[in-house]
Image (cartoon, rainbow, N blue to C red; front, side, top):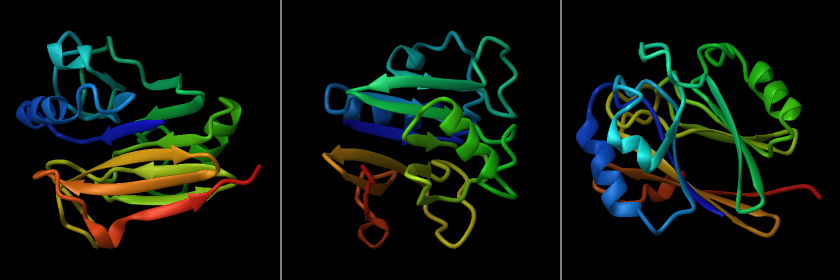
Length: 172
């Protein structure tokens, strides 16, 4: 499986169009973790799968999605309804309930990835307004290779941020 994960573009539609041009046909899915500030009917959603963030006012968006992509069960949310600014506990429990091995979220604008209870928990950072230690506008690619999960963060110029690359081993 190879998926692109992006979040928090806050009205910058052009960056999503650029990602679609860059990755269409090269990834199994393009996942958006909310706060796009675009209408749910926008044509970018024909290529990307969004969820509703706290600044998305179109009520047509789902607040949580769970999909099986290339045999991998993935859950994604924005995070504001899962208390992600305080703890990953609610998010991890929701992923367990969904029988998902991956939990993607946005909201904090801070990139980060960790394996918690055999669930890969990932925030791609914000593609427009980054916060935290790494103030780079980012998105992430997540790839599986058997028991290994590779995560690479990229900047808006589609250059990998080498020092942020991580590989995790999943338990059987």
